[in-house]
Image 1: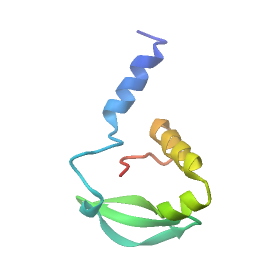
Image 2: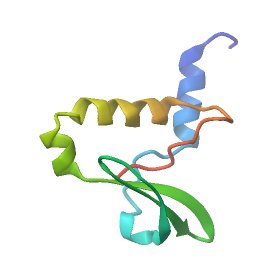
Image 3: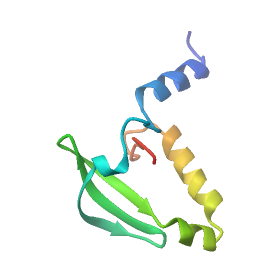
Image 4: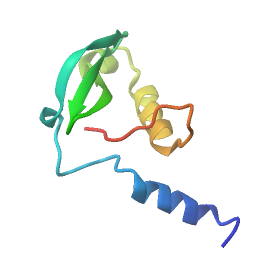
Length: 93
């Protein structure tokens, strides 16, 4: 059905796994740091021969600086975004 956004949203969610109960953070091999920020670091990580950008955040800093809502919003926006010029969120732990 054209114009039915709920069908499009459901198919996008089925296509991408944001929360994966079968895999854990330890399954990724961290290669090197590719960026740093106030709340953590971004690593080049490998899983099954594919490269990923893995963002690791310091929860205590986020809580101390009262940025929890901003971090949650960032995750939710990335989980819902699907565009060739925006990094896709694959998983969250």
